[in-house]
Image 1 (cartoon, rainbow, N blue to C red):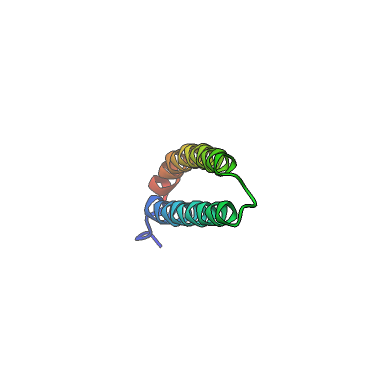
Image 2: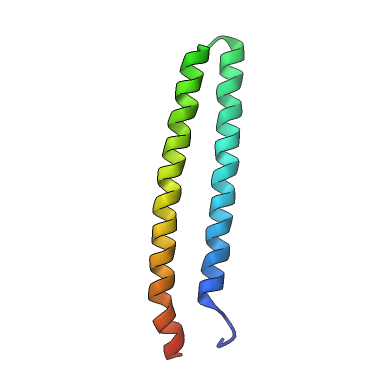
Length: 82
């Protein structure tokens, strides 16, 4: 158990989350583009929705970065104690 680096494990989980988030953004943009093509949204509405999605993703990413950094900082003293 001493060989396990908690910070590395947390980093891998965080990167997996970022990858999932990026995939979600790409898929949501495809959906918005399809709605625009079908005429269910105007081009301007589609652009506004895409911009809003990107803004929300940036907020979530920043919050995740901060939380991950805080958890790594808290985990390091515990790892040293073991």
